[in-house]
Length: 349
Image (tube, rainbow, N blue to C red):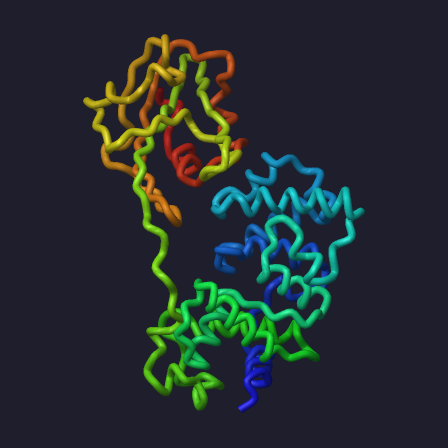
C-alpha cells in the first residue's frame, strides 16, 4: 500500500471546505495556523473570519492597537498567541516591508512560530518540502506504524519529525500535509476513529494489534495547581467601576480584570474580612459588600484551576481612574471576566 497516495486520494474526496484552503496568501495561511493552535476548527473559523474582515492585510493588523487585537481574540484563550501575532505582523509590515518570509528557515525565526507552523506555512503557501507534525499527525503515524515512543518526549519529537519527512510527497507537499492533518482530525480521531472504513486498515499496526486506544503515548502532564481568586466588582453611585490591566508574564497578560485579591482558600461572605483589603482599591473607602456567587466558579486552564468569587462592592465615590460600567465591554478581558460582565445586572445596584 502506498501510504501517501492513499491519504491524498482520501483527502481529495473528504476534505472540508475551509477558507484558508482556497488561497496561497501567506498572511491568511499564517493567520489560520496561529488561530488553530490549541483550537478546533469549529471554534477557530469564526475568529479567522473576524480577523480577515477587520484586518484584510498584514498592514491593517500591524497598525491596530494591541488592545484591539486582544479584544477580537477574546474567548480563544492562550492569549500569548494574539500578542505574538500582533508583534510578528508589525515586524513583517514595518521591517520586511510587508513581504512574508517564503521558506521554513526564515519563517521559524518569527515570534510565535515554531516547527509545525513554519512547516505548514512553507509547504502550503510556498510548496516547500517541509513535513508538518501536529497532534493529528502524531496520532496517525503512531497508530499506523505502531510507535509507542511518547510524542511529547525529546526522542519522540525527533523520531516523528524524521518519519514525517521521509513520508511527505515531494511533488505535492502542500496537499500531503493537509491530507494527513485532515485525516487525523476527522477520520483517525482520538476517540472512536472510523477504522472499519479506513483506507489504511489493511496495514495499520494499531488496528491489527488492538492498540488504537493506547496510541499515541504521551507523558503525564504538569501537575495542576489550584488558586483562589477574589474579584472586587466596585460600583459607585455614578455607575462607575474599576478595572485594571494585568501585567507581567503570568496568565492573561495585558488583559483587563476587576481588582483581584488571592486567598489561600475559598471564603464565605462572613469571612470577607480575611481579604487583604488594606492593600487594595478599597483602602480608606467606605463601602458595603455582598457575595455574587456562594459557590466557587471554577475556571480551568491548562495548568491551573481558578476557584473564583465575585464580591460586589457598593460605595458612594470611586477614585478618578474609575470608568463607566457602559465601557466595560470595550476592554479585552479573560472569558471568566467577560462572562460575568455579560451576566451581571449592574443597573440593579
